[in-house]
Amino acid sequence: MGAKHGWSCGRQLSRRIEADGGTKAQAATAIHEHCRVSLLRAHRAAHGLTLANAAECVRGILREWDTPAEGLAHQQISRWENGLDTPSPHYLKALCYLYQTRPDRLGFGYDFSAEQERIRDGPAHRAPLTIDQGVRDMRRRPLLQSGVSGLLALASSHGLPHAGVPQSWSARDPRASLAELEESAERTGYLLYSAAPADFVPMCMLNMAAVQGLLLRKPTLDAQRRLYRLIARNAGYIGIRVTDVSAMPDTFNWFRIADHAARQAEDKSLQAWIFAHWSDAYGCFHHALPLGLQPARAAQSLGLAGARSASVYGYLAEAGIQARLGRRREALDAVRRADAMFAALPAAATVEDGTKISEYFLRWHESNALSVVGEDKLAREMRAVALAHPFAGQDLAGRALLELDQAAALVRSNDVDAACNQIMETWYELPAEYRSGQVPRRITQIVDRMSSLQATNSSVRALSDYLQSVDVRPARAKGTDSAT
Image (cartoon, rainbow, N blue to C red; front, side, top):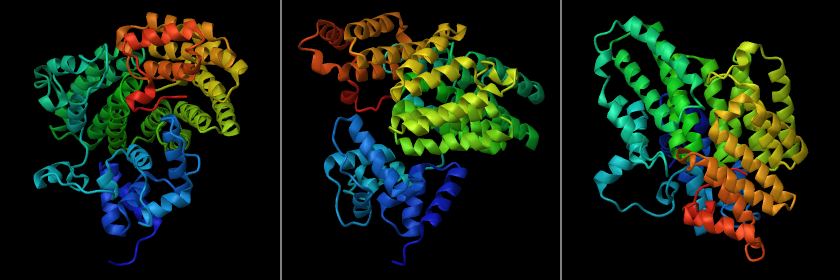
């Protein structure tokens, strides 16, 4: 075996593979084979993490799982990567979660499944991600865990991208169809946070199905870019919507599709919008937080050319991540930057059309980040502004999460009875289709932190018993991260 290649070689290879529509797993396999480094190091390179970043991510994951790991240093990660030591089971589990893979693909253990299964499932042989695959993956997984679990069956009954274009589009003039799809995407954006996920996601899928049909008709280069722009917008809409109610792999899968389509469309403003919301998803799922800073900063820089609302969102996403990393000064600085940039936006950049940012979302994200870093007084002021905004009555999941931030603040001020009442009231008022994803994760996290009071506080005990009776289990029991 020849000499190992440098870090920059692996990063360049990873960027090239992802630009061509490949996955992180494919990039890691290619880096392992080309750069002659261990699989574990190849995965780190594919994700763009330094040793210190990787150690911080693993510590954060284990902290969320209530498994102490503060002693883990980057030197230990290096020893694992160079074959000088083997991670213990809880560290290996955290590494698999960080890189979204399994032990044998990190170089620990062996895969004894049949050869055909390895060919079918192995990352080295997997074809680049397509929109059809994204939809099939979404159908295969349990997208929503409670009230909207029938969403995919509903979408299937209306026709999905892989099932072909709806018959009504087949005979239309392509130019008229494209214009109509663009108008549809504009209208859909206004429904992003107000329409029920069970209605909204199939709507976007149908639009993507029609776009794919037009792409098969060999459009001009300009029309092709417009079509890819539509795919990016609709996939981005889905990624944003399912962040609230679904699991992390589903959410990230849609953002990957959106990013790839935006690159094909050569639309940097659209990329900035996607990066900002993708970064926010890292914070929502409390996953690989240092890695989530990369899309936030990309949104900040890409948006400067014209999509300044995306830059504002990029700073807000960074504020949320920095707060969850315990970096108070950096979080407050990001909040100030977002606030100053928002004040300079023209009115047209603050409408609630799905791709801009209104004062409601500005105050929502500011209050959340401020709450995480313990700035309860200022967070309360921002939260009050957001809750008083007319849009709070439409964004049901967002409103519930704001109310739960208020409950967490009550716990910190030792007003446990009021916190329990707030949680119960929020849950009662929440429609069934939002009772999966972020809201139950946030509830169980708050309740977990009050668990020591169950023996002495009747409100905590009653709330815990009720949540168990309706199958809202502690976040760590589900094996998923939740926001702080």
